[in-house]
Length: 250
Image (spheres, helix red, strand yellow):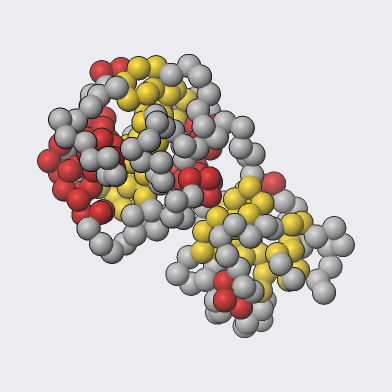
């Protein structure tokens, strides 16, 4: 039985994650379920795509990831299965799965054709994607649930690296869509009115000082040592991050 990882914008409270877990238990009672992320950027598949792709390599090699950030739920967007380096991802064709597919050494894509007997127009996570993830976890092959998709999926033209803030964690740290490998270690970053120096870890700078570093999942992150970067630096999801050409702080 493959493990199932949940990546959603459903929120850590409320009834939605619980209903998904209940559906997974009905369809695959023996599958372990991992809460990967329940507070992905709400209604924002693009920002979420960079987080999902960065998190994926740390998941079990045989994981099934149910990924749902789906503002177009019930509309014409396709439901997908993506196989990326042995892992399966199940979710909407709105760009959410695009970076995970692109960064994989090998990948395949299917459009889901299976339909549940009852399908809520607004909760495909529970009624469609959870049963799909459960079936894959239990060993059902994607060809039994879907048809191969040979066309590009939504987000296939998005950049490999996104120079924007994509997530703010509970500590106020601001993750960007930039991979650490795409920026020089000595580079300064500009966000809003602030120019931020690099660091290897928090204690490289004084208490209350702002800086950027490469976080534990390989993304460039903006932080304040023992402070709340989002409040102190007035950061929001979507803010543009620029490599400062002068390479000196102001």
